[in-house]
Image 1 (cartoon, rainbow, N blue to C red):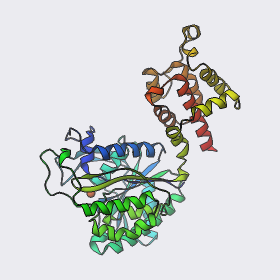
Image 2: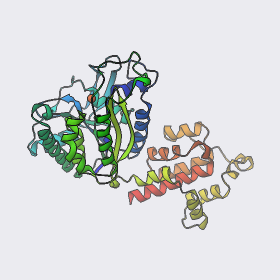
Image 3: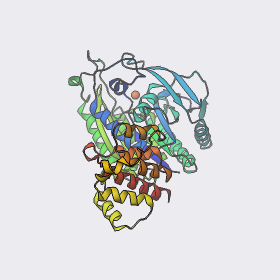
Image 4: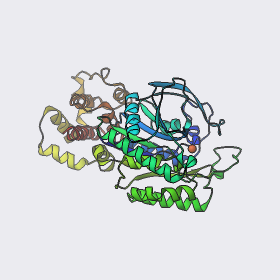
Length: 420
Ligand SMILES: [Fe+2]
């Protein structure tokens, strides 16, 4: 399975602070909404792909002698940002895909890189890894593989860093091409990285937040424009100059590694947000592989082809009890199934044997006549997560029985197309 997505996922602890998750001790009023809401959209796109693992390279795990890989199945501790202990004291608990970590480490070693496995169960994970992973998947229900930065940009030169990150990316690609796992790669870094040296009295006071310098902003815009044009090779070519001129956090090699692992994607990247945090430039961006089968789910959000689907059902081009039931629903506009005369004689369908997330929708008032199509979809093998995501994508105002039924049908279709 190829890499299903790459994400540029910056890690200012301020973003977690402003989200107020239960894991973080300090509490904020709000702050940095543009970036946080951008993260929300990226999270939706990426989690809809149902990744098996998230591989993340963080600039704040600095190893200097080679690249290290987290290889402890479970890690639990408290992470405190040394610069912003007032904002980030986060109690984390994560699972690591140790098998994948070992495969990646061994491939990198075979490629001639200096590597090591981190097997110390008391190891404290850096805040860069934690912030990016939290903002991508706050539920922490997907195992990660953490990779360190060997910091060759500091030890030797940015050119050496580039060479090693490119080789690490190639090794990563080779492992993942042969793997059955659906993997998301995460480049955990800001773009331009000059920042204020004094914090405002209220850290989330947005009247004080702005980019540090116009020159670095222009550099960021130049890089983002290349991302939007799908010019990954140019981004990598320009990386040494960009890193030097914009004092960018790309000096850790994360972004070069990710683009190299994705074989320099040529499709336009999805830019969800750009914003400053204590003066640094941060972009939230994804590269979703066409092979990721994202299309079926994206169709729901983009087009929701109600008319076309209704027509299809009316024409009776597809058979089966499931579609027959839907046809009735669509023809009646969802009304007749709710009428008392029809439902009186029938037993209320059971929802207690449905998966929790879906049951919750019925508890909140989703029409019980939809239990049957939902169960049919689950029997057809549609993953619960996918079904739930599809139903939840319908805007509240369109939440009629017939429309939900249509979405369920589209989900089944998309799933069958995906499996084929
Ligand atoms: Fe950082």
